[in-house]
Image 1: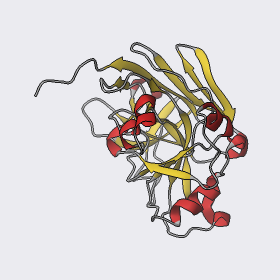
Image 2: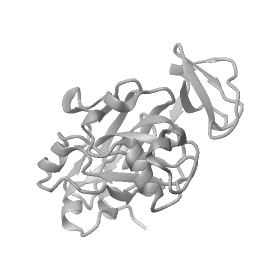
Image 3: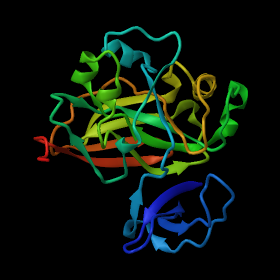
Length: 259
């Protein structure tokens, strides 16, 4: 099933499900018990929002060997984890803002895991039972700041630096799905999830040995090689086979707003 969050003019955002180019509401949050109601709106006539409002965003660094190589760093022996602020989240069609503090911002298409059932010390063998589904993310990064700082919070934490969407796919075999990223129609990234250093079950087990995973949390599972610079006016298309395409524009925040 494809789960979405959407809004109709004049109404509150709500969860829904998508099929055959139409959207229908869910009776309640997909993180609990719910029913699918009738498909009643054309998909193109609703505003799609980020498909989940996460409690935590846990991201993984250097989880594709060729991306580690292009950054001139070693493949990690254990997962590298970091957190992104909730204020980074934007939805389909929204603009990524290039901050004035950075001279080089880059895209990073990633498979995002949406936790359905929380837990602590989750075993890898049971990890997928805790997954609601999967969506597309882009871990936008101020690369010059990442290379300058001793940790990555600033480089990864600017507002708008985590586009999510367009839907959560609950029935997806992620063992070998294609990830691609295009800028203005030109291919920049292309790889398969089978190239991950650490699998999704391994990541869930590792993270939950450190912190409790709550229902609604998301895990960004790392990006393939091919990251490149985003510029004012670009159109970014992040695509994952079986989920769809997440499109976002890019705009420059040329100066610090006045107080």
